[in-house]
Amino acid sequence: MAIIHPFKGWLPRPEHTDEVACVPYDVISTDEAREMAHGKPNSFLHVIRPEIDLPEDVAFNDDRVYEKGAENLKNLLDSNLFYQDQKPAIYIYQLEAGSHTQTGVFTCASVQDYDNDVILKHELTRPDKEDDRTRHILTQSAHAEPVMLTFQDTEDISFQIEKVMITNSPIIEHQGEGGVVHRIWKTHTTADFVEQFSRIAHFYVADGHHRCKSASRVAEQLRNKKGIFPGEGESEYFPVVLFPMKEMQILPYNRLIVKVTDDQWTALENEFILKPSEAEAPGEKGIVCIYYKGTWYEIKLPEAASGATVDSLDAARLQNFVLNPIFGIENPRTDENIRFVGGIRGTAELRQRVDSGKADLAFSMYPTSIQELVDVSDNGELMPPKSTWFEPKIKSGFIVHTF
Image: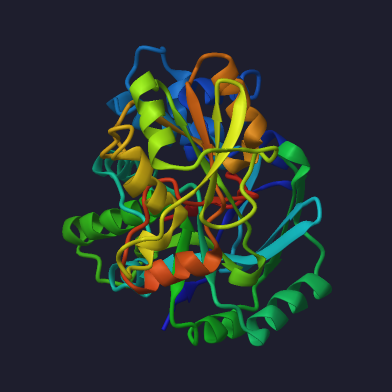
């Protein structure tokens, strides 16, 4: 059963929240982070993207980057911008984006649960990204950003969440990018939460596979170096926001092909029935919309030959029946001829990229469902890269976990 661990979080004082809060490290590039942090010395981007404070020719994994991140975090926590809770707490985190609202529990999860598959994964992690986040965590002696997890919600947990929200006022209320409103409540009455979550069989990683794996690696290294026993000490836990499955929103993760030859387009025409489409996004699973030379088309993907859940995903069917055999993209993780565009940017971004010549062709995808994610995870399978885009995103800088 799942373990949650209340902790003494570091939080920005309410009057400083707006100047501290920022987007997660992995949704922007270094150049975008540098631009967003310009003129904002207290932005948490200086902690999670510290390379922005160094010369542009410094590599992202240079020793100076990790040292700068640790220095920036220390300066923030030592300033009057932040304070640390004196008792372990559980926090309620709500995201409101237009008509969509999701409310979760901000706490710590157990590294042992990750290692023992109580926390289930659906993506492969890359060693270079693991190395990077592991060094950030070790150098800062902190987990600076939470992981987004989901779980099969229960009435008892929903009741505990509602009770905190009804009996307390938010300690943080922040309007972020795109008009998304972020609210956080706090409670030091944590025993009922711990008890209710102990009855949950599995947590599922929604966003943050590399942060999970890096937390595991940090815990292992500190056990070996400092003789820490599994489950003892704050380094054995990492911050997460647990959202109920019924409230999760997954948007499409679209694809761009940078260069398309005439022969490849002809092969696509010969293999599939290309129907000109007025729609820019598919209306159902198994349909993909294609933008090429100013025209939208749609195709129907063939059914998967195997019975594996992962092979039935649209991302897998596109890879197996289109990207690999027609465009020669065997490994979408490393092939330079493919790009990925999160669904929040919409099909207008796809049109702009193609019309501007930055890409030759775009695939507009139907979103993966939360049930597909759960089924793949339960079966121990791994999704193709960039299969899910969760929106809205949780922000960084609200609550920091130190050890």
